[in-house]
Length: 226
Length: 196
Image (cartoon, rainbow over all chains, first blue to last red; front, side, top):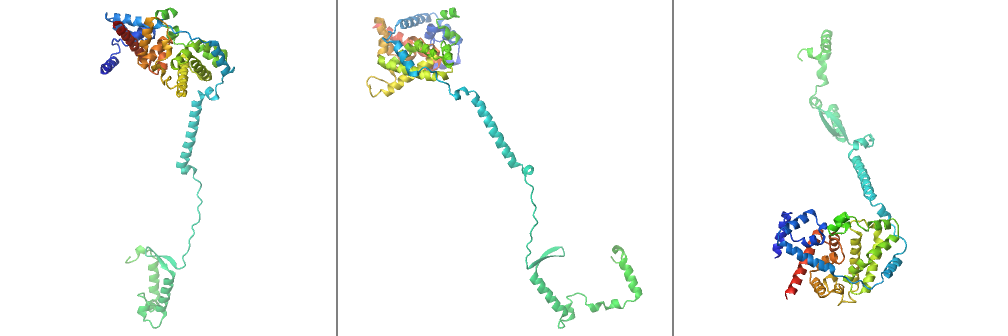
């Protein structure tokens, strides 16, 4: 039986103009309170001759119900009226300020939210644009701490860092080699020409010297053998 | 409009959609204290009858009705008219009655039920009539609670289906359908009694 009811309800949803008896009592007792569609459905149901009997029976019960009179309670209504008046007093309660501003409150809330949003957005913009607002950098002179023991030299296209101690030691060693009488000339020259090997320059005559000077004055690429 | 309403067997305010108490509410909200006295005079019997269905004694029903009006007085300034003032007032009365029942459950456990509409109480029994009326009263008591509530609000309190739906916490269509099944069940019960 309940499943039949469910099927009926589902069918009435699918077919809004399907005849129905479910609104018959409401139709009989107050047809003006029915929607147009509801009224149409009941009237389609009442178009069937058999339904007229049901309509009459429904009307009879409703009339019987309405003829039932509820007895007036034996109460003095003025007593209740006075009691209520005494309890609530003479002053009409005032609406709270919240009630008076109830329509404006959402607008205020929206405005406040917009302001907060704008401020937050502005702060975020400041965070992501360092170029526009970055303070001018103070370039400090680099401080070089010279290490006491090392010095940088450039040799044959290469930066070399040489410890001063070892350079001085090498210099001393070189001096010792060059000026020591105990060391053979070839070893002391470290492969470079010995001063004595340049003695031939002193043997050149004036003419040869003049030609040599002329050759040196010429541009390098015009020199013979360059 | 009045002719149409008469033809359709309905109160004019149902057709027009205007709450007949609207003017009183507006006057009260504007600060006119006497408007509330008029509301009390107009609705105290209806409120009392509603409360009396829940509360067994007349005096208790009067106390609860008074509480309901006091609560209505405090809340009426904020009443916005989503429902009619009468159904709003009746809802307050029902809530007060239920609160009263809860508070007095221990005092009268055998007499008070949480939902008085599902219990036998004296109010419907006091409907006056002959033998047919007595049978009808007995038949009403056999209705399921929801159908009984809808039927009583509709017939004995003269509420529109919209107001009934607001008080019974259901849709207007459900109220109409419940009313139909209540009447149908009464017909069945009375028909069976006649057959016996």
